[in-house]
Length: 232
Image 1 (spheres, rainbow, N blue to C red):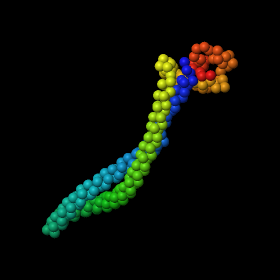
Image 2 (cartoon, rainbow, N blue to C red):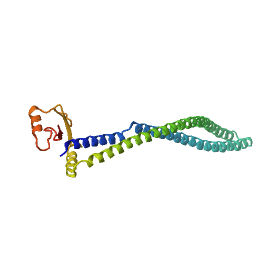
Image 3 (cartoon, helix red, strand yellow):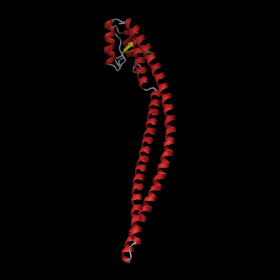
Image 4 (cartoon, helix red, strand yellow):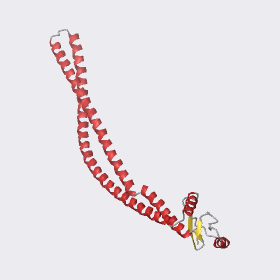
């Protein structure tokens, strides 16, 4: 078994795994997501304000209708009052007119509140429109950066996969099968370099006797601590 060739393949496979992981965690992806959420927030706020404004306008329509009905009723009572002589009947009409006047004042006060609310909503909607436009530009820029970063990451992965194909071609099929099986059973790492008496996979220093056993091994030498194949 050509352990040196397998070690080179292992290094490429490790780079592929790391690059694939980094591909999903690109900062540009997070930035783009934040920009999307901000634009969605601004749009949702604009919808809320517009809905509140529409509700205020609808209530104003009701108030205008009720106010017109009150005014019409008061006019009828005033005409009726001019034809009544009995003091008790006149007093009853005056009390009813006073009640209508109070109700009319309440409606007027509420109408002023609603007009102020719609004016404030118009101003807020204008500000939100400016904010939405700015957020849209930020999102477009974030998307451009994300696409560029993803394209660069994909190009790097394509390069690594091409290198892997070339490296795999130099390995016997049976050895490649053993390597893949061993790598799957050992967390993605099948072979590591033994450097200054330390396993490159588990980073444990081998004792003198363990190093001697590895050096004297006529089969595929393994790390006594993690079972990865070792390249001396």
